[in-house]
Length: 81
Image (cartoon, rainbow, N blue to C red; front, side, top):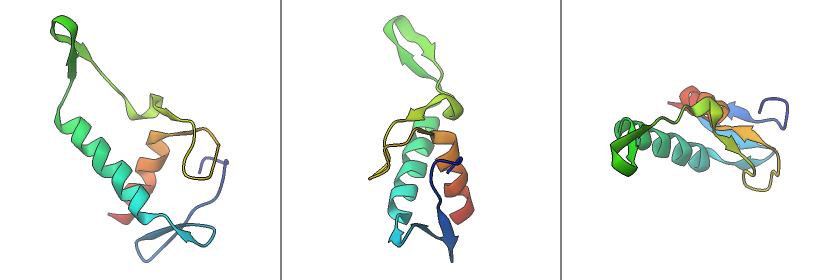
C-alpha cells in the first residue's frame, strides 16, 4: 500500500497479513462509485464541489495508522472486480 504496508491479492480476495479485508475494499469501492454517480456535488448556492480520489487522504485504515490515499485503495478494488 504505497510503501506503508503490504496487501496480497489471491483469487479476487485481499489480505493484510492473514486477515481477509476484501469486504473493506469492496465497501470503499462501492462508496466512491456512489459518490461519483452523484457527479459534481453541490453546496451553498449550487457551487460545484469536485473531489478527486488522489487528493483524499485516509489517516487510518483498520489497525493501520498510516496515511494512504483513496486512489491507492481504488487500485486494489479494481484488481478484484
